[in-house]
Length: 425
Image (cartoon, rainbow, N blue to C red; front, side, top):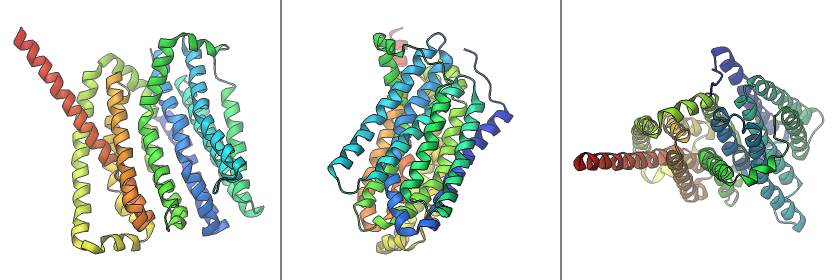
C-alpha cells in the first residue's frame, strides 16, 4: 500500500500540536499547585498518578496496531476501525466499574474525584486512539486541531480554577467534558463499518487483531504501569505527601518521553510497510545493533551510579533524600536519554516486524516493568519520591538487557540452523 509521506511541514505541525498539549499539561499542573497549595494538590496528584496506566492501557496497543495494520489494509479498513474502537472501550470498562463499585461500598481513598479522573483518563486514551486512526487514514490535520484545542482548554480550566475557585473535582469534571466532546467530534468522521460486530465471525482476523494489540502495546503499557506502580507504592509509605512533586517531575519527563515515542509513531505507517517487505531477519539485525549500543549506555549509567554509591557509602540514601527533587531528577533522568532512544528504537523496529519479533519486544517491556516494581518496593519506602525516580530510571536498563539477550540468542539459533543446513548439503 502507498503511504502518505511525512514532509517537514506536516511533521512540524504534528509535533507542534502534540507539544502544545504536553506543555499546557505541565503548566496546568504547576498552576494548580500554586492555586490549591501543596496538601490539596498532593491528594489530586495521587488520584491522577494511580490511574495514569489507564491512558496507556486504552490507547497504546490499539493506537500502534492501527498505525501498523491500517496502511496494509484495503477493504477491511472500516471493519478494523470498528474492532479497534470496541477493544479500546472494553479495556476501559472494568476500571470504571471497579471505581463505581468502590465508591458505592465506601472503600477508603476512593471517591467522586477518583471516579471522574478514571473516566477522564479512559476518554483521554480513547482520544489518542481516535487521532491515530485519523492519521492512519491520511487525515493528520485533524490531530493537530484536536491537541491545539485540548491545550487551550487545559489552560482555560486552570485559569477558571483561580478565578472561580474550582476544586480538584471541578477541574477534573471540566477536563472530562472537553475530552468527551473532542472524542465525539473525531468519532463522527471515521468510516466505521455499520455492522462491526461481524468481526466476531472472522475468528482468525479477530484473534490476530487482539494478539497484535496486546503485544505491540506492551512497551507503552509497561511504561504507564511503571508510573502508576511508584505512585501506588508511595501512597503506602510515610512519604505519601511527595506525590505532588513526583507528579510534576513525571509530567515534565513526559514531555521528553512522549515526544520521542510520538515521533516514532508519526513514521510508523511507512516503517511498518517497509519492514513487512524486508522480513524479520533484517529487523533483527537493526534491533540487535541498537540493543548493543543501549547496553553500552546502561553500563555507563551503572558506572556513574556505582561511583556515587562507593563514594558516599552508607550516606548514599540520606544524601539521595536530601537532594532537591528537581535537581535529583536532572541528575538521574538526563543520563537516561541515550538509553531511552536506543532501547526504545530497538523495540520499535521489532514491534513493526513479524509476530516473533513483536513477542520479544513485549517480553522485554514486561522485564522492564518487573524491574521497576522490585526497585520501587526496595527504595520508595526508604527515601520516598527520590527512590521512585531512581526506580523509574531503570526501566530502559532492564529493557535493553532483555532485548540484547533475546536477540543474541535468536541470532545464535539462526546461525546454528544455517550451519546445519550447510553441513547437510
